Length: 474
Image (cartoon, rainbow, N blue to C red; front, side, top):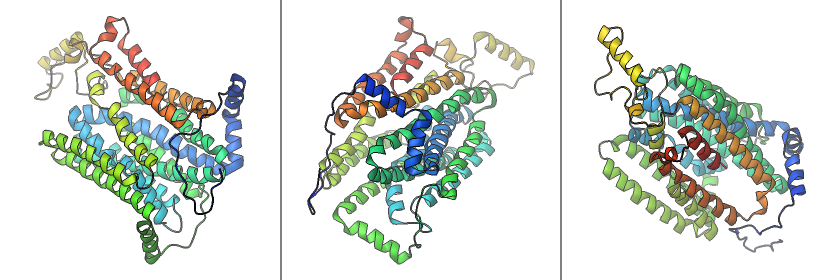
């Protein structure tokens, strides 16, 4: 619709519903979004270098790099370093702080250009930090890595994932304004690359953990960090270099943000989330173990207060924006993630000192070897050999989790294709409400798994976890 000069632009919470797409139209649209035709269409509009930059950032760096790093992280922290699930949660939560700073990364790149460029230098910095952190995680023996050091290095790896994500998203938004008819296709390119590239990484990661240990995956993720450095070094983002801003110019741009009533509120909200995330992460990592109940209470109260403050701040800009921000927090409450289930269900790698899933025969052979002096005794305070197998816990091997990850990535790619070809006709409100209700119900399946009800109905642990991973990404 046309907007008169000076008339405020309202943000709508839901897109108008469109008429249903016929099966013939669905197939035609799906055919246009497959393979080379899809890439040619985007390359013709934006250039092949930009398309390749999206694939490298989302597909190689995130799709493959995240698979390697996040897959290795669980085994590295829980089995190699020997953390409890609570300690793992605190370290993992601290390391995820960069994902809570995405709005600040965007604000920083918008207002503070480096070398006359707004996006490329930040991608390059992220790649360098990721390269350093992954090199350290690969080289350092697990016995020499403390919890704070592991948290710091993993935090830098997440900077390598989160900051390029913001930069590419910003360039997608800029191009979608110029070619709005290709906005959904650009999103499909990014998310499709994430799912498709995650498949080969998911295929090999479990086997590599089983055979060589978690640190090898950190080494392979180095190539993902190198890949995200290619677009900024090659100028593939299509930025026009301007004269480098002086300190006075940067201060003027920042002053413009804080003097504008709308920009000031958005910047304050971003700063609030960033400050809270950093404070909470440091608090959990430093005193979370010694004062767990106090930290838990502060976390619950702080989350409620942060959500309330964000709503009150952002409603000054737009009520829909404020409710969308609250939805982001509440959706995490309704579908929480915890490492407890993985710790309970997984079997350590074959070369791990954790013997929880060894069979009775293997434990008897080990006891005999210890008695004969041909094997070292278990560390003091370790749990008995085979305790998890004796309690009939799932003991899912790294190879099982490998194929679970493959199914998850394939489902993500399939769900992205479905959205790009059909679900664009749904209103935002309808698709968010439907998917959120489905995710809530799917997460309840964890209770079925832990209570072992799936076995009573004749569904094996492997089959059950595969079914869960098919539904959730979709």
